[in-house]
Image (cartoon, rainbow, N blue to C red):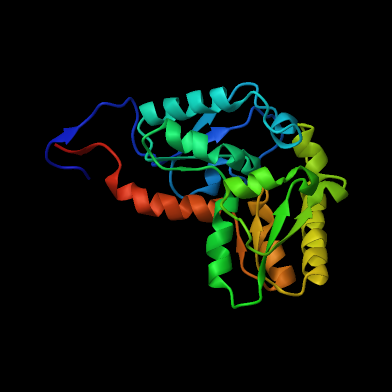
Amino acid sequence: MASGRVRGGFNQYGFAVGILMLDTQFPRIPGDMGNASTFPFPVRYQRVEGADPDLVVRRGAAGLLPAFIEGAHQLQHEGVGAITTNCGFLVKFQRELAAAVRVPVFTSSLLLVPLVHRLLPPGHRVGIMTVNAAALTQEHLTGAGIGDIPIAVAGMESEKEFTRVLLGNELVLDVDAAREEHVRVARRLVAEHSDIGAIVLECTNMPPYAADIQRETGLPVFDIVSLVTMVHTALAVGQPPRPV
């Protein structure tokens, strides 16, 4: 319960993290970043018109930077304490978006890779699961600050359900099939690279399957929900309205 004198200035209150959303219609189940029930705290969503998932992932988000900057400005104006996005491939805009606003910006779970690597014993690499491995370029890795960190990447594009539905922006997702695909790709990733010490999920639609991947591989699994939760913990106490 608030007490004393507090300062306003915004239309709404109570959310610390703002999320720049792609322009999508595919289902977002609990655990997905785009499902508000995923978080035990309120978040603020801002749809970026025209940000088609295929355009962002397979076509490099060509021409979309101004729209994402505009969306970031809107979230900042509404009082969020930090801004993220709901596509890991937008890490290519990390520097530009961070420079465009006065609050912290964390575009992708890929930003966790340097930290996760530091947690591991020497000689271990970080596994990355992504919606489309072929589309994950050096530009994305550089944007995330990954540099010469040893990684191994596995993409979901080899499977039939998950990537097709997301990048095709389809209305129906077979959740059980998607879960089986994630387990299968994770199993292949660790079988091909026995030195993987932890896995980072690039795609913001993958967290619903994180527990399945953990059970299958026995490895720590990090994702965008991990990162949002960490940032929210750092910001929540200081969110407005603040004492005068």
